[in-house]
Length: 172
Image (cartoon, rainbow, N blue to C red; front, side, top):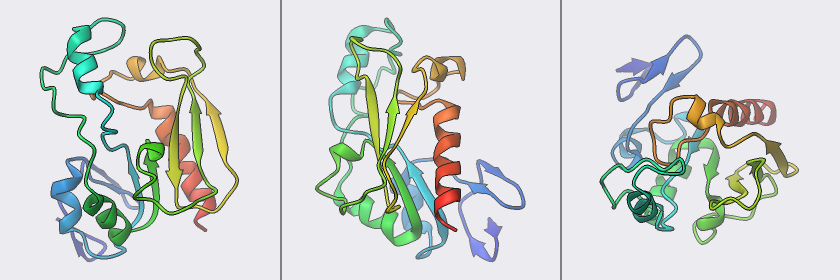
């Protein structure tokens, strides 16, 4: 698929300004030329055993049992090296689990899930390549379910939209 003169994998969505690729980054990233994308917005597996927890919960308490208990393996550093090679800017959810792969940054994002003392985390952290002040977004965790949850660690559309707007404001 050609877009802006680049040969890219098939688009999940595209218009005149946007070309979104959805898939396994281990397969897609090696196909992309250096600095060919503006923003790599990703939520890699954290390696915290969420796959086993989802399987054990058997579909209760918002967990969907995907049957596969191997989807939460922490990626190797080579994946992060590819992310940095192909993109001008990055937002990486779960950045706190990958500090050994990331360089210091001021521009962390905090997703306050608006619910306390729940069995899951009260919030999540995203590392960004932007050297701006830390930002906190309070968005209820249940919005991902309302969006039609399809992925084990799916973020709500609202939090993803905020990430794109944050990157757009800060990359000019």
